[in-house]
Length: 403
Ligand SMILES: [Zn+2]
Image (cartoon, rainbow, N blue to C red):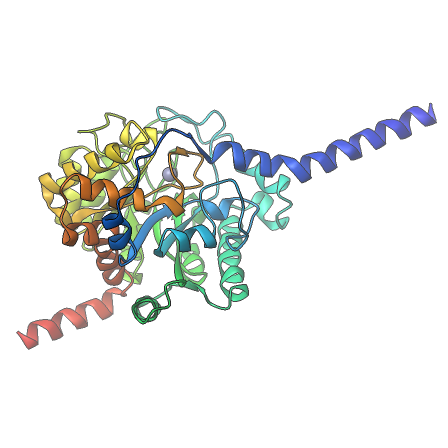
């Protein structure tokens, strides 16, 4: 009997070790895949132009996973080495804190949560097992540690001066420097408390989507049960974000809440990752009316590279969505929003971004337009978005005074 018990305990221990050692990496590598479909050869012209671009990607979920951004791995979509190979100047890293069980695009309740199992499996600090706020703070810590360990090759972008020094360094030839800006995928991590916005801001978060896959205290999600508008709490938080200098992201937001955010916004709004309904009729993608509303705020739409965003994974499908936005509201509203490592399947990882440049050239976009799409538009929005409202008013009145 005693021997049986010992064997049983041994078996449990072996299974537990196997789970903690292999499961997180297994989930990461199978959920963040490449489809292996063919890619066209890249022209010399595209390679040359790509190496001179300032590239910004508005959305990656790499911080969710166990690995450090500094660790070069053969799976997933992104690490520092691949960001450098892709010539990425600034990457926005999002914090995912809760995803519903049975996650889908149509209807999810807020009850289940896959992330809990993941954070335990990844042996994250115990405080992150139950608190959504702590999960985001852990993601900020992960970024900050990577910055420190990289000797600032990987650089935090928390304010305008961080952004300008990153751009100046790269201009001066330090092309290996990649900036990292923190964002949030769903403000349920506030845990219903407005004061937690300050906690998140102080940890370095500068952009946030109000909802993810389920309705929360702030608003309805496009994938929630009710899909309602902004709550009074949600309105307060949008105002507080604009006042502090945090960029509002409408990705995943319900149609009703999107319309309300676009009406009340006094700052450029982003759609950090997704597509447009005109080229890919999926509920999460933007209607023409929404694209026009977002453009009026001066914002950008980060076009994604996966099936749910552009109905294919080819560079041609990505550029088709970009072309639609350009033709509807102008080139200055088009940007990149990969959703890399966000449990999506893509055709190329971040080291292969030259395929977007290649396709843009092939489809007749001129150099100036390509520079705008690949990063300059996003830089404009981030530069403005990071300024606290008080500073922004000052700079506007100075500009007016100069005129
Ligand atoms: Zn997302």
